[in-house]
Length: 133
Ligand code: THU
Image 1 (tube, rainbow, N blue to C red):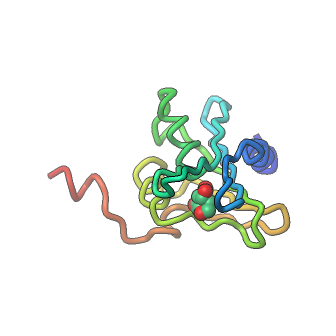
Image 2 (image 1 turned 90 degrees about the horizontal axis):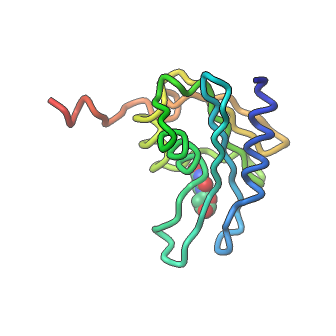
């Protein structure tokens, strides 16, 4: 699957965004080795801390369906903001454990595109290696 196709899937997911508080809409799409795409969007809550971000929704959907990090070949994250959506700190922490360090992460807002990896977004990581000794 082409990069642009995965980005388009993330924009499709963004249409399902539930964001009555921020009105900031985010979509994400995880591509797996067998070509399956898992979509996710941001889902807000009146108890704001209960909000789930788009990229976590998408990666959790992939894991919920039996995928693990080696199955994930790319992740697209899109928003309707003026800048591309830089993943929040909680998402960086989650992605650092659930996808590979060099897996391409495509950020887009339809005007600008940035290619990232989780290693570049979060270089000094606290992870499994620190907790499981
Ligand atoms: N949001 C995401 O979906 N992903 C991020 O990495 C940044 C923030 C969402 C959460 C919330 O619904 C809205 O954007 C504003 O913070």
